[in-house]
Structure formats: C-alpha cells, structure tokens
Image (cartoon, rainbow, N blue to C red):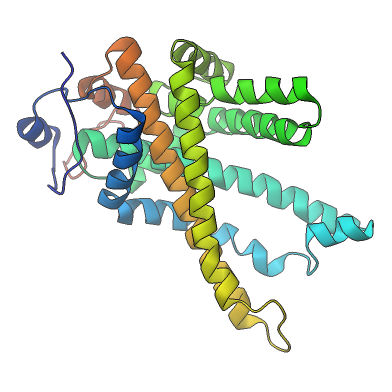
Length: 301
C-alpha cells in the first residue's frame, strides 16, 4: 500500500531522518489539484536552490538582451529587410535559449527528486546529473521544440498541428525519464510514450493545467516590466535595460523551475499509478546519498 508524502518545513538531513519522520517509501497517488498545490509547496521549500540553479544559467544567457540587434525580430519581419548578422544572432540566441532552458529544467527536475528523497537540494549534484545525460536531454529538447514550432506554425493545417501536439503529449515525460531512469535519445521518447499511453487523459489534463499556470505566471511577471520600463526613452538606456534584464531573469527562473517541478511531480504520479514507484526506487535512481553526508559514492549512478 502506498502511503502519502508531503514536503514540510522540517529540514531533513538524511534518508534515515526522512524515513524516520514520514515512514519508509512514502509516496501516494495525487490528484491534479494536489500536484499543483505541491508544486508551490516544493518551490517554496527549495526556493534558494531553484533560484541558484536558474540564475547560474540564465544570468549569463540573459546578457544577450544587451548585445542583440537594436531592432526586434518583429520589426525586421514587418519591414521585410533583415541583415545576415541579425539572422545569425537570432539563430544563435534560439539555440542558446533552448540549451539554457533544458539545463535549468533538468537540473530543477533533479532537485525535485532530492527534495522528495532527502528534504533538501544539492545544487552540484543536480548539475552533475544533467551532465550525465546532457546529449540525450538536448536531443529530446530539440525534438520537442521542433514539434512545438510545427504545431504552432502549422496550426492552419489541422492534421499536422494535431499530430504535433499529440507527439508533444506522449513525449512530455521524456526529460524526467532521461534524468531519473537514464534513458538515452529515442529510448527516452519511447519510455515516455509507454508511460503516457495508459494515463494519457490524466497527463493531458495535467499538461493543460501546467500550460495555463505558465501563461498566468508569465502575465503576472511581465507587469513590473510594463510599469517600470517606459515605451520610449531618450538618452541613456542603462536603467530601462537593467530593469528588463532583472525582470527577464526572474521571469525565466520562475517559469522554468515551476514548470520543471510540476512536470516532475506529474511524472512521479504516472509512475506511482503504473508501477508502484516508491521513495526507495527514487533514491536508487538518483544514485546519491543524502546531501551533507560525507561520501564518495557517484552522484550520477
């Protein structure tokens, strides 16, 4: 029988303390409402760790806002004229953004497992876990990004759009699969399809809720930028640009980490329902001992 787990304010330093406080292998099936609620509970519990993970990656990446072309991509498209250097910049920026988002999402996902298993986050172990399967994670991420672009760009063509969004649904667990189960490349996608096919209605509902959550979060986080940054500024642009940088950094950090937490909890729930996933199994897949213990055991299993 699967028991309930909840993240609490207790700072648990080891697996033994965790199991002593909650009982061994404490995981249970959750409703979609529970998943959304625990997303914010976990985000609050591991806030410092999640912010550090995001800022380490997005901090340098968001500097692209300073060095990019003065005109926006929309302005270039409206005029029908764009230079080769601008094209190169936007291509490089898109690739860098996908890599950065994948890294933060995957590291935050690993952090969720650490919080569930140990009650705290080891940031170094999160990034080491990502580096263990970085090529597979990037492969999956570029496939998902391509499918999303095809789905949105081909929305006027009903069949390609439906096929793309169906693929995104069934491949939605691929990044956590690669992080936790170590599946590579197409095997990660195949494993995701296997997990989702018996729970596709539930996963669809979860992904829709997460998408609405992300849209609402993006809207709320964009308000400070709209208020504080004037639409037209004369003279020196340092202050408006700095505000845009800070707001963009916080927005990226919050959106990606919250999405990672929610998707990871949904992934855990699917595995609990389909194969009796437990904390013991989670610890085994993480391949680490509790953060703070002196050990030389591999952090990546």
